[in-house]
Length: 336
Image 1: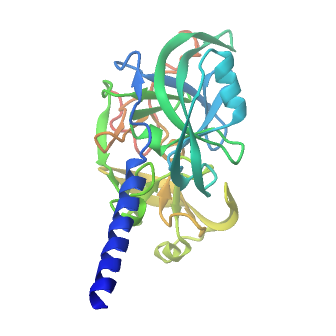
Image 2: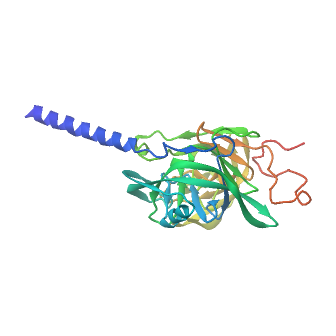
Image 3: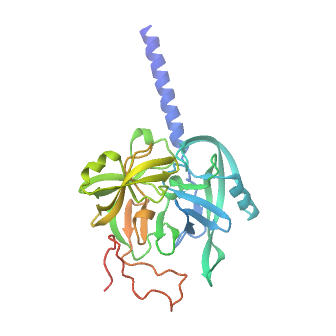
């Protein structure tokens, strides 16, 4: 009897290991390639809060490192088909959080090519130049919430450059010139997170001399730094009371407009938001935190800052600013 029980337990354990291995094998974006892997692999204009990227006329995606998987709507698929890019439907299960923070289990996947257009400005009106690159074999789960999302499963394959003044996002495979390393990144290696399609990335930041690993979440709305309520005790200044909006709802928050923040060897005063929700206690949105060009290197786990701003391309030489000085506490070094 004991031997039968032992054999049963072994069989159950082997089945569990096989199932776990099968889930891990259902990774995403393994077949990605591009026509031109050098230089800018893809470029997108950004708008809204949180940021939505337009990669081609009428083709919009939320940029969300907090979403484990990339999703696409039927409308976006139809737009791509009109452009001559036809999705290939595949059947295999994937599991992860979507762009609204909800757990999504999907047995259907779409593999499709994404054409990235170059956006230019002429006389204050937007026009689109030719396609600069096509990224092939991008995996998407069908959207269940009306959002098309480029999630961390896709974004972690690149070095992501956010141009602050141009409100543009560029994808690289190789590090572009002009950046200085600010701090190393890390990612979760916990067993419970290993089944997700993408990793969960963190950056060490100190607020009021207390350091924690902050989850990099570009889905945070208007918030640069988010801490839990219990961290308020470290603040000696009177705080403002406000309401923070997120994809998951509204939350009462205490706001410190003069929090002392350090990131790598850079630091200064910045606004910190203290509130609790059902997401990570410590989180940051680099698009809202840094008021200068920033590059997040998910490939080599580093974050870079550009010592000076890029001059906005939409300004003519006569109207462009003559100085690149900034009051950003994160400016690497001020131009002489």
